[in-house]
Length: 111
Image 1 (cartoon, rainbow, N blue to C red):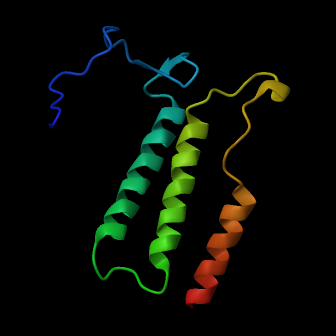
Image 2 (image 1 turned 180 degrees about the vertical axis):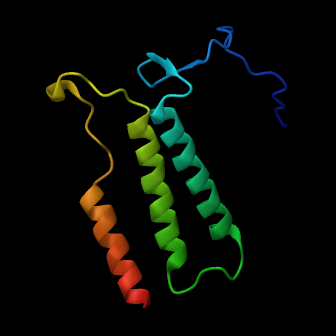
């Protein structure tokens, strides 16, 4: 059975704000929300690349999947507001050094 969602709404109205993961509200024009959108668009483009036959070889499919996974983690990190107290800030799920290092190794190996 297919579910068809014809109307999705929160009953909060559109006052130009949206929720973060902790249910705090920020402006839809907040740079964090722009970053979430950019990460989501990049992830979608990688999904298209992964699904297009003949666009990747030599293990690139696995690499693209790992990048997509990292982008999902980054999106989750962006959805949490930064705590004013560094000790209470949520821990990032993205290991930046690992992502950068593995990407550099993969690109170097393909040259």
